Amino acid sequence: MIEKREKRIQRHNRVRGRISGHKDCPRLCVFRSASHIYAQLIDDDAKKTLVSAKDIEIEKDKSDKGKIGIAFKTGELIAKKAQDKKITKIVFDRGGYKYHGRVKSLAEGARQGGLKF
Image 1 (tube, rainbow, N blue to C red):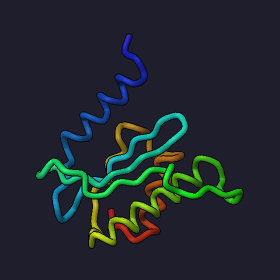
Image 2: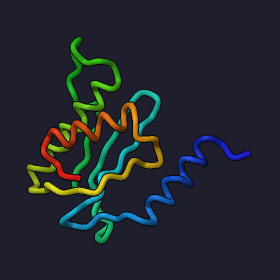
Image 3: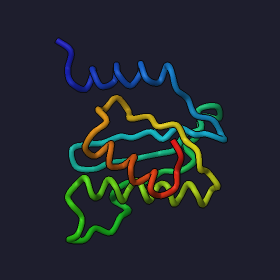
């Protein structure tokens, strides 16, 4: 029987077969664990991470609505870092996860921060 993690990896590999990032339009890759969320902008041609952000870097306060609110702030943080490097257009890679909850919130935060998908 295939485990849940292995199924996610299969979905991720299937998506990665179709999309890739390059210098002008990098790939925004998302990874979420049980307690944290990470995002990075990757140039697949040069095989380099251009920008990365994680929820550990964010100052949390009482107004955050749990993990979803923190994921939104992480999206805004990666958008800010990307704009500092003059990156505005990206390709979104949800990493095999369903597009809802924290992954959706991170994408919305990145959009609000100024990134174009």
